[in-house]
Amino acid sequence: MGGRARRLLLTGNIFTVTVLAFFSALVVGAVIVVLATPTAMQAWRSFSYEPGVALSASWNAITAAYGSLLTGALGHPSAYAHAFATMDPGALSRAFTPLSETLVDTTPLLLAGLGIALAFRAGLFNIGGQGQVILGAVGAT
Image 1 (cartoon, rainbow, N blue to C red):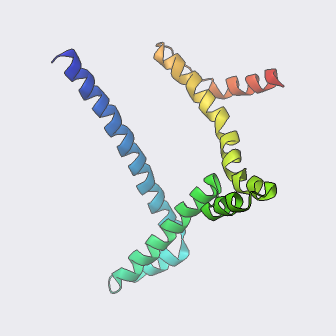
Image 2 (image 1 turned 180 degrees about the vertical axis):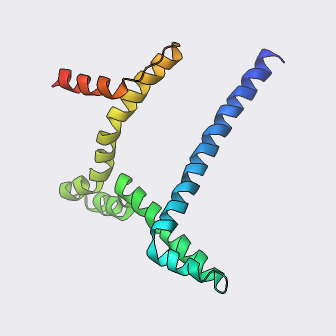
């Protein structure tokens, strides 16, 4: 197999694995949401004679959970629309607070992941990512 074909195959595999990991995480999360929602579990008890009710209750629970997750992480689109329509500084601040807090919370995780990825790429084994982040925070303080 030529170098170009091999690179294409490996790149395709990396993309496929990433997409499959993402969707399998969504499916496992959806199953957990359904199992943790009392109304969905109650509807599943009557699945044999009302399957539409069970599936509808499950779908409602999943969309509510993932919708709340996205709204909590990125903010609500209507809040952005209102903030841009009025250009009120308070409304802009409230609209962008969830997004800015998400970025604040994910930055240390991203930096720790990059540090560990760098060590793995160099052929080393690094299990001290959490300690490195803590000592980096202490040093920065």
